Amino acid sequence: MTNPEVAILMLSLFIVLVLLGFPVAFTLLAMGVGFGYYAYYDAGSIQAFGDLFNNKIFYLLNQNTYSVMENDTLVAIPLFLFMGYVVERANIVARLFESLMLAARNLPGSMAIAAMITCTVFSTASGIVGAVVTLMGLLAFPAMANANYNRSFASGVICAGGTLGILIPPSIMLIVYAAIAELSPLRLYAAAVFPGLLLAGLYIVYIVGRVMLNPAIAPKPVYDTELTRGEIYWRLLTSFIPLTVLIILVLGSILGGLATPAEAAAMGAMGGLVLAAMYRSLTWQKVKESVFLTAKATAFVCWMFVGSWTFASVFSYLGGHDVIEHWVLSMNLAPWQFLILCQTIIFVLGWPLEWSEIVIIFVPIFLPMLDNFGINPYFFAMLVALNLQTSFLTPPMAMSAYYLKGVLRNQIELMEIFAGIMPYLVIVILTMFLMYQFPGIALWLPDYLFGAYVK
Image 1 (tube, rainbow, N blue to C red):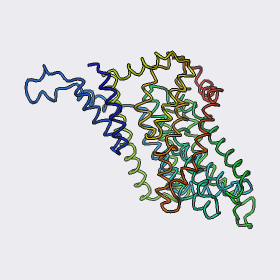
Image 2 (image 1 turned 135 degrees about the vertical axis):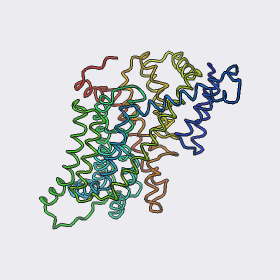
Image 3 (image 1 turned 45 degrees about the vertical axis):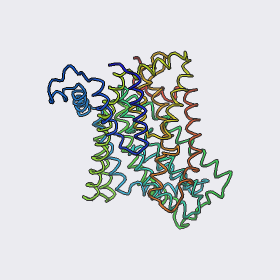
Image 4 (image 1 turned 90 degrees about the vertical axis):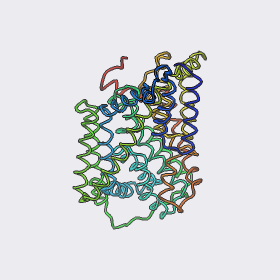
């Protein structure tokens, strides 16, 4: 039955329950089943107690679960996760950070630059924001603190760099987005390459500029003067090249059309094991930990999909999507105004919610309207992907800040972390503006590799 008021109540109640701390996946599932039972309820069909379970919502739930299990795109998620966890536990990132610190020792804010580049590379190998922030919090923050770096400045570098994992391929978020929006994950990956590098580059420009204006926040560290240049380069090559080659092989095989994301992810998972063996860091305990964490994260994503598809189906059946679409279209917005409206809503939603709830619940509300405004869906996806960086950086639910606080505990106050990440929010918005002015930043590479997009 069409009942828009109930649909809006359903959406509002979901936001309230999430803010109260209820698990997102099972909240979606419970509300989808509860409101779906009401939506599909037929009093005339109930003749006995057993007929109470003869409701279409249970069939819908079953079909959604089966659809998630047979979705080929989602197979890449556990494989990419496994690659990231193996790389994390093999001490490869620690070697890379130490080498980059030495290589950048003559630059302003050298340790911060090394931390940002390490975050970027690790994000490319992992795609897991929590893993990047927590690991770099354990590696980079103590090193910067010992060098008398400003604690707020150091924490901002780690939090901002860690969030690049949801933008730079092989981003788990982009795989989820591809499944939700029914877009090609290959095109999404290609579209994300230059925006991700641009954002990381602007972060580094900010770090250098900030330190040049105020050198006191990042004093130049003292390194062992006996290290020769050749020795430094050798350390950099042996830590940077193997991981970079693995990343290039994985992404290159995807963008070159040689492998599907799932096949490339399998190659990456195997490559992660090989790298760990090369560095003599592969142990049975580390493999078990990686498998456990992969299974845990994959289960979360799959239940999120089952719950969100059930929730979205019921929300649409009740008329929720139609109400919002009619409201937006009735304002007679220009395409740029529509984009500003959508991105503002997503930005505000990033204060209380994480990227997963925004992508799975709210982004599909805007997707059907893109044709009305003549907006390329891949361009829109990149604006969303950039905007979602803010969901990890905006208080009060800035998850990257909480990840870092969780590992640093009493070494820093939460408000110091919040202060450190504020400049990076401005940089994210600047990057979105640049991409709007120059859409080729996102669209040139996918169009070059796969031809111009045609719906």
